[in-house]
Length: 288
Image (tube, rainbow, N blue to C red; front, top):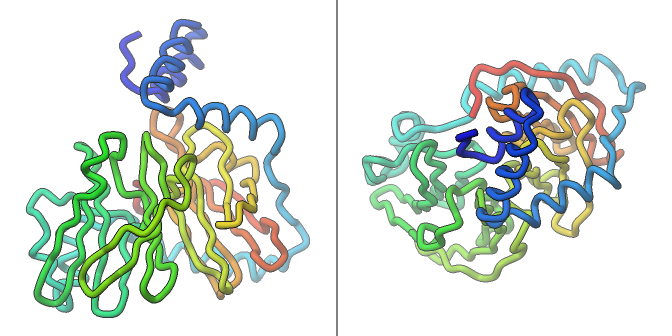
């Protein structure tokens, strides 16, 4: 019964059917401030079923998109050493703190001569943001001063001088920031709950985001609130990566927590037709 996380208790309940494990999972949900997330999950389960997959799409097109995704998944998490190897010739990566563990593919952006990185530490909580130039590395600890923010989930270029930052896990915010020279300025909170997006992409001038709900319904969402729920194989897996393709499609890799099975699924969403054209279980090189 000594399970430390919500997911661990739910996974153990599925094996043992011990109702006390559900009670503990509910207690942890409330204590961690994630009750609204639970209610949203129940609501979505009742009223929004998994999306269908259109089966009349050209199979050759679909296979070419799947092949393209396979070529893009080699790196899905960038450690400090990988960042140094990939960007060290252009940016002062060595200025990052020595204990900077790394970032997700979705949590760094290039704006002009800046590289902006949000930390996703796997062991110890950290939501450090680094603004890196050719000769300097400026650390922003804004989110480290918020106890319920554990990681930076994504950083998304919104305009040439603005970014959207999404956080997790207990506080799932999405905030608008202005890039002023080498300084980040907080502008406003766009969403204060249920917005710890782990996928982000701009496709055909529209911004799309992917949700981070383990064991609950997940969806692609626009800033205007339009939701596209994933097909059944990916429905209850959180989004781990978005890959925009041909300025029309979004390939999404969705993942289960290891305690819930650890599987992954690849979905492809057509933003023009507003429907999914592919969804199958997926094995990748990396898994974060």
